[in-house]
Length: 405
Image (cartoon, rainbow, N blue to C red):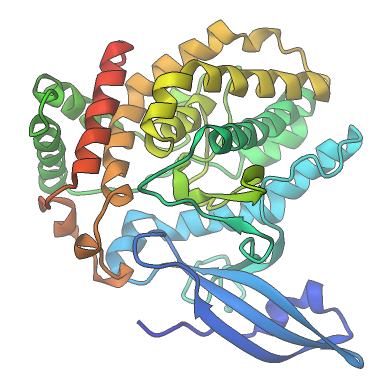
């Protein structure tokens, strides 16, 4: 595929360029390889800028809608691309203002910086091919994406869990302490759907997932239970008021797999973690993000040994932040969090996790360019690796052991 060109880049970066800076050269390359990102195109831009008598280089990432009708339909791009633009342009500034009032400037340091965004060049709110989101290039800042087939070790997982808890805590604090301001944010998340299929395709997808589980030694008895959850979750509308439980409900990511984290290391130790890719965000249970991350993106021996420690760290960070903001953390006890986790795991996350293992462990032979995917790819059985089988077996047995299925 050719590298897309971005029209009117100077206008898009107007806040950064101001009156005295002009773009004199641009180098554009693809940022992600096949299998690293499914809901968008990612470009690395190296922008040469003249500032009066000096030159400087700005290195940023441009996120564009994905090519191909199938992927755009699956991700409901007219809604989800707008979601992400609103997250960076409206929600983060609102959260930062909330923290500023509490003397906590710079506390929410788990997102990339925004440089510019638009939905189209037509002057309306309809997402088209000229939609683009420009963010700082975290790779240039020393952050890296982990190998999706290996996942997070314990130290890196702790850093990510704390970032997830921060992300949940700030809008939760805003909801509790400034409900009128939070209403403006909440209004940005009306109910919407992604990954919709006709009845025939949907039934074939469920049958395929059931068969995948039953074909793994030691998992045969759980195939129907997994299929039953698939049938329920596929009908769920994102941000559906009927599924929102207070007081824990907050802004959630819903796609916290390994490729949506960037980690910075110093002397081999993690010293920072950023979350990216907020197009599938919604208002719901924070337990969903925690469970999905732990069971898709952390190394299996780490989960076996440290699951309780990671949940405790998440809870400690969440309630500690709420107390720091001036909230009463009493309603958010560990017992109540465990209830949230159990409900989230049963309602949604077993199917979500199993489905996600396919792209995580996909081999080069099974990967395509984004514009090549079709409906039939969702219902076509492909050979799965031994690593995927082992992870699926572990996941199913863990959920069964905890009586989540």
